Image (tube, rainbow, N blue to C red; front, side, top):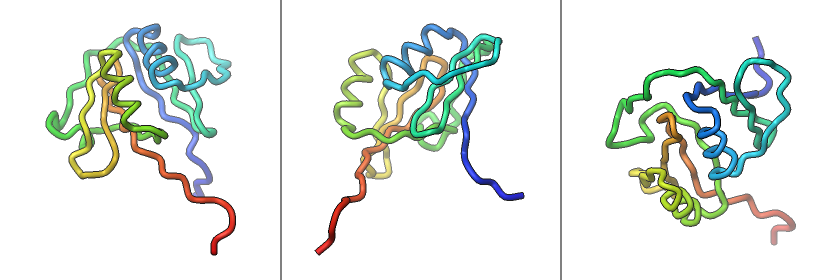
Length: 129
């Protein structure tokens, strides 16, 4: 077997509209085309998708409530971590800064899925002297 690309992660959500607000409006992810008929929606970033599938379930418990990064989570990069923290807090979403000292934070979507947001430091482009 030779794996060649990471395609998507699927998450079950209780309230599709509430989750669409979080992933589409708060995180700013773009909707992707979806050709299946069951309730859900797909988001895409840099060719990788997050599939939200409507499937009611109990709230997800945190395995380690003191360090959210030690729970199953998705990790995304942001250009301005402070702005991301403010946007999440202003919208009523919990924020926990990374305890590792890295420029990263953790939040939870409406169903309790942990999302990591890390400060993106792109590689410098152009000529090196």
